[in-house]
Image (cartoon, rainbow, N blue to C red; front, side, top):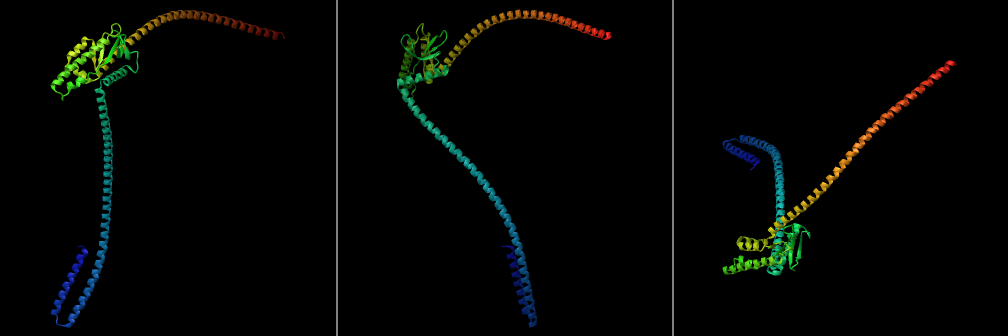
Length: 371
């Protein structure tokens, strides 16, 4: 309830009280004149009360309207501020949500690309598995790895340092040879990939008996490869007294060195180096550095020889320059003496010329006196 309602209720109560008072006085009054007078006074009072009430109501209404307008303006201002803040927060939250959504989409696209790569990799693994199960394709795989390593270390088709599919005088063709400096000379490298029995040997799904049998067969396979390389690619007088066996799988190379030292010893006796991709790169890099140092030493000796020749020529040049300098000094002295003589002659000519001028002046003076 507002204040106007309270005022109206108060006035109504006042009128009720006055009416009650009037009735009580009417009961107490005995004469009609007094009653009429009282009624007249009550009517005037009621009229006055109505006027005052109307004025009060009008004043209160104006004040209330002004008050309501101010309150309405404040409320509108506050509502506008709240609305602006809410819009700002909504825009900020929308921007953050948009960024989050964009990041999610980017992550999803990356996940999708990764999934595609994984699918492609799984296909490649299956293809590689199919390649490695066939002995011929497995041999080609090892040769390709060997050629890539040679190309990365020595450069593409650098036939002065290495060649592939090189035929020796005994008719055998090595996968590659390296033209190394003394004492290595021509060093043959052949790729071997003993994978079949190795798989059985390390498989946990096989029985111990099968694994032991595969381990024995694996050793026989490796020894056979070592024997083949030693007998085919070590040719006295043509190649080095050593050769290299390239194993394209690091796991097989690690298995041999960690658990089969007898195979390493056997290869050493047969003068065959066992290498993996990592160790072959290191070995070839070392050989390349040796070749480069030898070439540098050769160039250094040539430079030293040429410098000695240049020193001899410079000594001759210095002797000849000294002789020329002495000749120039002699000529310079002669030129100075010639200049001195020239100056003396010039002075003589000047003095003679001065004497002639004086004689002419004397003759002119005597002629004037005779006149």
